[in-house]
Amino acid sequence: MLVDHVEAYLAMRRACGFDLKSEGKCLLSFAAFSDARGKDYIRQETAVEWAGLARTVHQRARKIGHVIRFARFARLEDSRHEMPAAVFGSEKGPRPVPYIMSCEEIQQFVQAAFQLGCHSLRRQTYGAFFSLLACTGLRTSEAIHLRYGDITPDGLVIRNSKFRKSRLVPIHETVRAGLERYLEQRRPYAPLDDHVFVSLRRKPLIIEDVETAFSAVAKAIGLPCRPVRPRPTPHSLRHTFAVRSLEHCPDGRDHITKHMLALSTYLGHGNVAHTYWYLEATPDLMRGIAERCESFVAGVQS
Image 1 (spheres, rainbow, N blue to C red):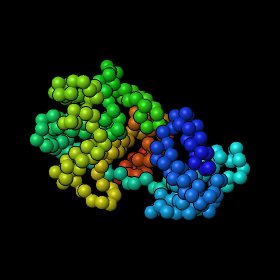
Image 2 (cartoon, rainbow, N blue to C red; image 1 turned 30 degrees about the horizontal axis):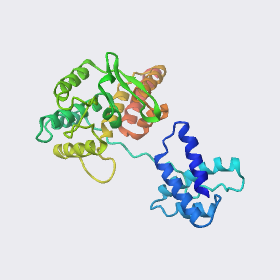
Image 3 (cartoon, rainbow, N blue to C red; image 1 turned 180 degrees about the horizontal axis):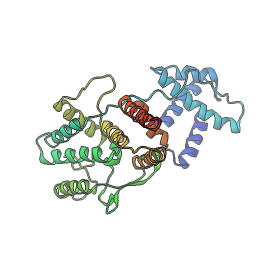
Image 4 (tube, helix red, strand yellow; image 1 turned 180 degrees about the vertical axis):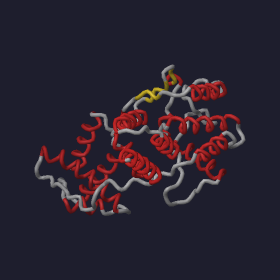
């Protein structure tokens, strides 16, 4: 049965450190779909039929991509497995345009977060949480998983984040002081839990809690809560941090290269190209760089 091949494939890749939660579910669904049709081997027409059940072209492309990667593994042991073609196009759709907050919007947002809800701890939690995201560019999940021991004299230790990488994030003394003020109120509330940020349930925050709080604050200060992009999300604080950092990039090719590498490391990007993406995703930033280059060239020519 094809499901046995899928389970062996998933076990092998998970042993190499991959989670494969979404991909694993998809491949097991494909195996069950194939087995129900009496197909013990990967077949092009079966894969296309199964992937075609997805609602969007992007989802179909991703599902067929999962099968293609599985087929490469399966064919090493048995050439009777077929290699499906990527008939739905590329798996990777265009990255959404980020919403970049102005300095005034961030200031208003943080102030409003400290006034969120009726409970004092809730106000302090989300005020400190969103302040930290704005000041460090951390991913939401990274801030959620912070523990007491991760706050060190050298900065914040971000453990096993995206791409299973850990890194040290230096922080300004004002950030450290803000965290300490918050922890003075937070420690007695949930003394048996060492997560930095906790909810009123005395448990670590979850993504849904953060998104709900972000939406409430964004609505309170009048940020555009439209269904189309760009729209503000918790990740907008990270995007804004990256763009503001790039705006302060010094002139000169060597300086720019070092600045981009440093920012990429600080943000925990797996590839420096992910950092350069902010240039093309932010027209105002790209325009500013072009103007600086034109001024530089004009000065050299004169």
